[in-house]
Length: 326
Figure (tube, rainbow, N blue to C red):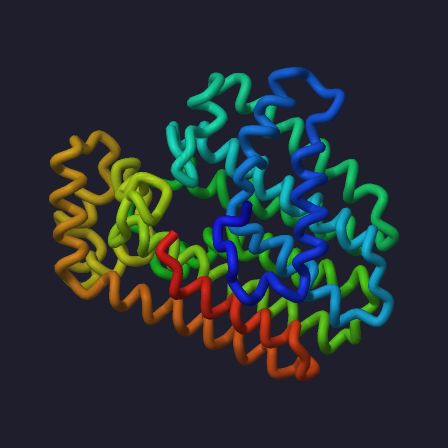
């Protein structure tokens, strides 16, 4: 069951998504029993499936669509995404995702690490049989970018980053995968080079809008709607754009609020107090404006594509990304 059941943008590619959901549940066949159980746990509620939806929609702009190879790309990139989440949850010591226990909470950090590795290996096996080397390279480069983004996050100095440093990090960690979905599918199906470039730009801007919106929800959302504990980034001392803007508004980059945000030993009461401070100021609204600017850039990129139902579906995806509550 998709997390945004009934959303209009799924309709043009519903058959492909149903087949993908079946394949994802089958990923653990013949593997270690723990991996089989983890796959069933992960993919029984597979989330929004935005990334494979982007693959399937983008492939429709190609001149030589091949359903099987497009499915392989979509499955490969969704496995890359899922593996990165499993590893992120270990690093973040997260107990819940999408309102269900994480793999590390269900089993152990060690088991979750190996499950993530297994998913990456499955993704590479699918990518290896794609007929275009440049698309195989995109999958590999995307994993490099995800790792670079995560390493930047876990090794960063405990100080407030600049807006540009934050944007660079989320482009690596989030937007690179959105771009790979759109650009990779277009290349795989021999789309016009202008359309490949447009879809790549759309994916990058969409990914930036998605992550900023996610970071806004982490400080201004509701636990039940969001599917994760609100304030988790703040508790870990991981500054995001609404926090950066809140500090800029209140005391510049080196004041007391900045030091409180990047501290890693906060109590629950301190997290609640900081959330209240950030929500009272203009940082959340300013971050939302930034997300909307990336949304608008994504929409503009679509102007280069032919006017067809799949282009409208991509517009609907972009609208959903900045209006969601989870």
